[in-house]
Image (tube, rainbow, N blue to C red; front, side, top):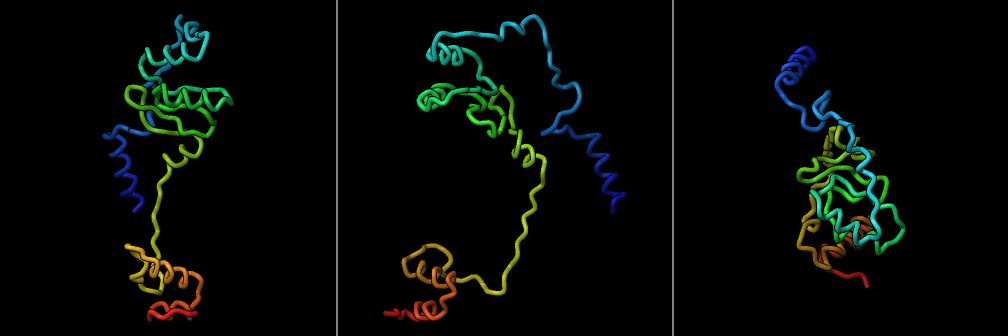
Length: 162
């Protein structure tokens, strides 16, 4: 009943710590004199890669380039929670950088409940639909999917239409 459901959810909220969504003050943002030190300029890509690899793994790397070789190099020579090359990538970390993934479609997926629904058709499972698949079994499957009943029956009985 709805009343029992509300009672269960109230008790759960009192005793459980949310994993996916943290609310209120647990992860405060601090802005102090270190803010200006975030503006770092390096002379070349090699220096950038060395700079990235000399520190703890970042939550994300944002690479703004159309150069395919540079993208490949950043992917293979650095490690981070995610490498941001496109605007629809899920955002999340590994290790001390955090965990999970969210933003865009991934937020929807994270906070949605998937409900599998299985509907069984009228026809029983057919033996030829399971491995190992041979050329004969694949011909049977093709005939069944094409609704070619004559070819299907001929194949079942081992005859060939020529």
